Image 1: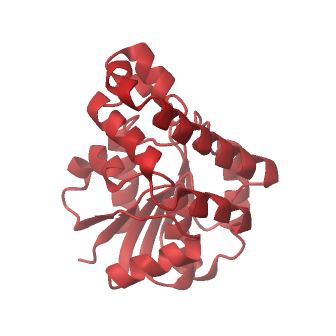
Image 2 (image 1 turned 180 degrees about the vertical axis):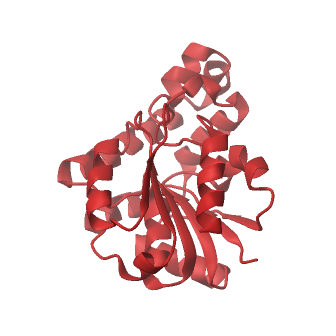
Amino acid sequence: MAPLVLLHGLGSRRQVWDPLLAGLAGLDVVALDQAGAPVPALADDVLARVPPPFHVAGSSMGGGVALELGRRGHALSVTAFAPIGFWGPVSRRWCQLSVSAARSCARVSDRALPRLAATAAGRVALFGLFFGHPTRVDPVAGVADARALAVWPGFETARDAFAGHRFAAAGSLVDIPVTIAWGPRDLILPAFQARRAERLLPSARHVRLRGCGHLPFADDPAACANLISSTVRG
């Protein structure tokens, strides 16, 4: 069976997918780390590391890369969680500013991160921007995610390239199974952007993940794994 490639978002790391791995046990999973670059270059990087065709799932910026790979005809299926590119100027700028602020906070509070993450109130403060249920975030993983964001290579390059990225053409996406999922509690890329995704990709399956935020994997890992698996099966 063709592999399933997992792509994280801006400032994140491949371990963000860990809550889903048990639910994807029957698939040949390849989770990649990527550094900062524009979406087309990130798609080229995936192709250089994993021979197509493959199934692909991506989160946020990784969702944009996954859709680009599908548009080019390299993917057998695409699952995109809150993908970038369906924004207007205001929501795109909000995304850039909010993730930049989270990066700055992670840098400033580095030594205090384990102490904060050990309490429910601290996890809400640290992770509430990204998760619908921040108290469900594993404290150790959450601290590691925050520290990865603080030092993520090429952050500014990838963030600034968002200004030139907007989904416009479906290409080969109309020929493969595509699922696009949004969390109603997403504070980074609010779910109203799903309406534009539905207009531009009417052939895709569009899903709302109840109670989930921008990173739904800790909020509801079973639902996320099921979405990917069902998309792969077509």
